Amino acid sequence: MDTNVSFTQMQFIGLGNYEAINGDRHFWRIVGNTAIYGFAQVILTVVLGLLFAAIANSKIVKFRTLFRMSAFYPFVLPIAVAAMVWIYMYNPSRGAINLLLDQRIQWLNSYDYALLALIVVSVWKSLGFSFLLILAGMQNISQDYYEAAALETNSHIKRYFKLTLPMLMPTLFVVCLLSVTSSFQSMDLVAIMTQGGPGHSSNVLMYYIYQEGIINRQIGYGSAMSTLFLAVLFIFTIVYLRLGERRVEYER
Image (cartoon, rainbow, N blue to C red; front, side, top):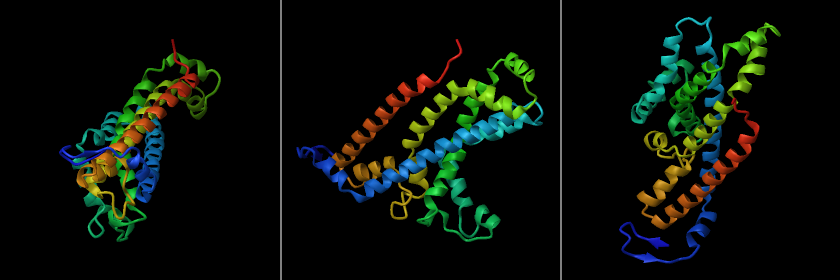
């Protein structure tokens, strides 16, 4: 269906919008950007969440409460505030990052660095949520297991990989699913910081749907992309739940 913004003029065009998607060179590049953006955010938030949770849960670390607050604080910041802070930090002449590197890199206006810059901000903003869930999972592991494991080995690293990680699998299963769905739906940072530029180098699918469907008033085309996106995300969720639950052992 092809229509205008007010839905007063509608024309049935069959699969025309989906054929247009297949021939849209920007669409496939943006799909690649979205995959890179989502994969990087999931991997980094889970890995850093595990590291931060291990530090925050360690009894030998001082100021654990302050560390927990510092790790979680970015998550509660409004998106607009976080974006403006990082826009200033990425400033080519006065930004803290370029001052530290002694460079004048155009982070948000570079074909090479714009997407990377957004990934850094996205990971920093969303890390607190993964960290909090993983920390809660660690604290729910009974100390009896660690006391029993101490009889086998004195290595904290071995106990972490042989005991802590397996016991955290149900939590990591949920964290990964939420991270994937959240990253694929992300568009706020893109809209505020780069508007998908330069040349769609930092664009993601959700923002492209908004650009085509709302800004460019291609309602039918935007709806077709939304339908495909919904279908892919739904199929991924079902497959992930079916395959993932078989490999996760829940304590009963």
